[in-house]
Image (tube, rainbow, N blue to C red; front, top):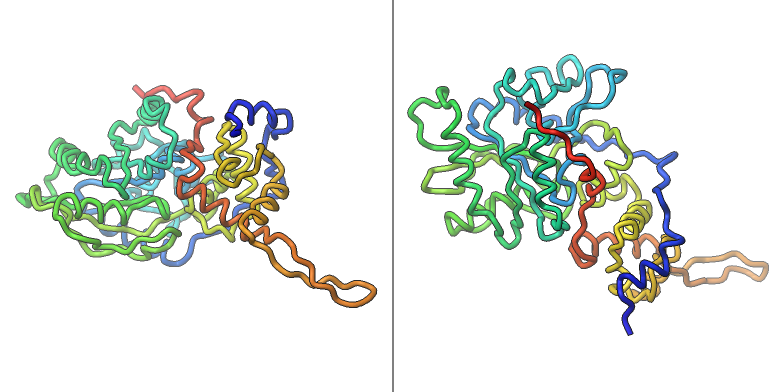
Length: 371
């Protein structure tokens, strides 16, 4: 007989960790050359753009995606949280390549003359959106009032984007475009959040055409700012696909872990077993115990070694290891922990373990909207 979620929680809650040990952990740098080059190209292309679409993973709707801008003086503290930090980096004339990193607060938005901005929270099918209204209120408190949740795989809510972009551009100043009636939009965001998938989805919906950009399940597929891609005929609209960019240094270890869980940072930079451990901690803490039934574990467990061992045995992921004994070498069959960790991460990323909201803690006290 299957155990209920409540029974599973009650059986394991006493042993669950209250916090995840971050001491001694770090997230390696992941800022390859194509990111720096792409960011410079994105800056130079801004004059041709009417609107910017910023794509985030809905599982990390805020907080974890604010990873692109730094304070000019490290001693002055962390950057103020804002969902448009990448946009501000693009708009600001002296990004890290000239004079060092600069952080601009939301209050500088009018001064910098930012382009119309639409935030798209993609992969909504993988996110726990029971508190969707709370998420929207939190983002509004950050000054982000134009938000659309999407699922590019199934084209959910995709048809809302073109009308919204048209509305935003129509209410903004386009004096630099003269009588040109076409729209040009730039798609930006951190790696592997679905920017290219969004463009392909828009083309399917409005042009009935197939893929225009290559997509993949790991970061770094799009490595350069591409030429304009048509996504709609009426109105005539073109989009620029861009490479995902991260900050040269992710300041918070836990932020890096969230990004890596969603496939934004390459797994080996953090460690597959470390990621699996953080995933296990997160699922148990949220009382999301789908992994127990998925792998037939019988009960919830907060020890990653024990979980991976049982997963490896269940999936027959084992490896032979030579052990030196007094009578010679002996081949011993052991669980393949890295392979089990990879399967655990794949199950989470594909949604098999159920929808998850990694930024749920940040919803406890949404920021007040600025006057």
